[in-house]
Amino acid sequence: AQSVAQPEDQVNVAEGNPLTVKCTYSVSGNPYLFWYVQYPNRGLQFLLKYITGDNLVKGSYGFEAEFNKSQTSFHLKKPSALVSDSALYFCAVRDKHTGRRALTFGSGTRLQVQP
Amino acid sequence: NAGVMQNPRHLVRRRGQEARLRCSPMKGHSHVYWYRQLPEEGLKFMVYLQKENIIDESGMPKERFSAEFPKEGPSILRIQQVVRGDSAAYFCASSRSSTTGGTNEKLFFGSGTQLSVL
Image 1 (cartoon, rainbow over the protein chains, first blue to last red):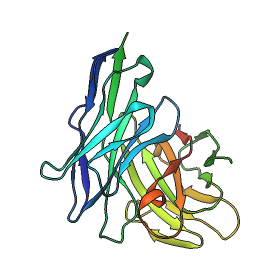
Image 2: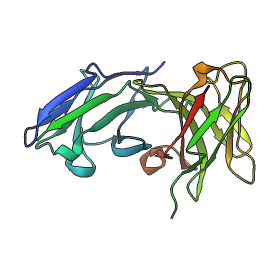
Image 3: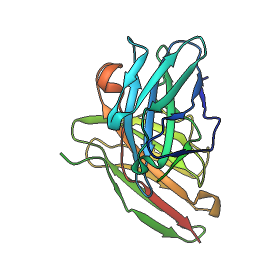
């Protein structure tokens, strides 16, 4: 079975400060890992993914995430937050070695960036 | 290049009625996924389809829910005899066919259908 945990319901950060949104995963094999962002009344938008290779993945809008196999984590980071980054962020996982293609999503973390 | 199109955006049904939600994947995509999002919760996987085939329906409730993705036309998620607990946002996503890994793993989501059951 595959699962994702996002331990924080909400993260508050001041504009210009660095932000981190946490994600840990569980799969029986090796993971494909993803971050998506959801703005109000919209579908999810892809931010970045880890498939293989470098543990540090860079994505859209200045976001990056680091794959840490020993800690089974894939935390989302940005060096300097913008008010426009305020949204709902979802981490997702898929096990590379099962036949199941569907992603399993975490419960989401609401990011609030204060001006 | 149009994205994933879902309609209607909002659907209101009374208890006991049927709800039909439509999803047209992106051009060139033959994999469709349906997810349900309850208020203040994450997305729960429902079903994964390819053209004319249901590949994984492990997230579908055993009764009242069905899905199809015909050779021609959109994918349909059908909910019979709706109850208040079916009220949620239903999202469709699509991805390319072919092998796994790389860009083929990226899901493109529609804007969702908000189902309200009175």
